[in-house]
Image 1 (cartoon, rainbow, N blue to C red):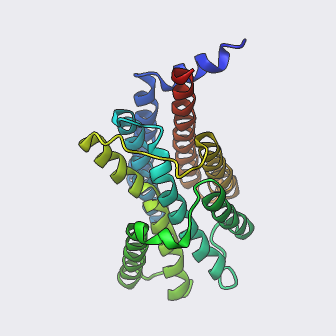
Image 2: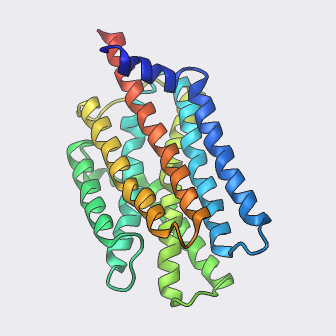
Length: 268
């Protein structure tokens, strides 16, 4: 029985299965999108949402395919984790500030998620405001997402909600979609340059991994699974899209844990 967790990890994250499972989930997202467009009675919102889900899971699949080619795949978490958390903090802050006006997702989940991000950045990743100058790319992505949301709503404003409410909602969605883009860029650059200079900023790697993965799973249980249950009778396709995204995220989280545990076994 002691070898069961290890065998399970190898079965899920072996050389073949680590590529097959993400590929299957990408195909599932594509199938949902194609099916939504093939239905004459398919609603426009579901088609857009499923397209965004497909875009959102591609960076996660890329990270699983590419991070193992980095000289120090485990150390990459310390480098990209801060940026991923900052982007999540940005769209959560936007949701919390807009809560009196409108509720995006579950308001209390957004508030708890924002507090969690701030705590993890401080305790897990040793983030300091003075170091924000090294994360200007995050600010650039937030500005880009906001500008894209503004243009989107100006060109396609047909909602019953106000222009401001729709722009806030779309901005939040776009920032969330870009959540793992810095990680993709950093992993790509590291693999390309064979750069093995990594560090944890003085923090424990297991602590960073545990806090990072716990936040992702905990938040997206509500963002994806609870939302899927809530909207199942309104839009089964959108609910399925949420489930596909959560499965991809859960596989990515288990992939990170597997990489850290494997490094520990090598060092023993």
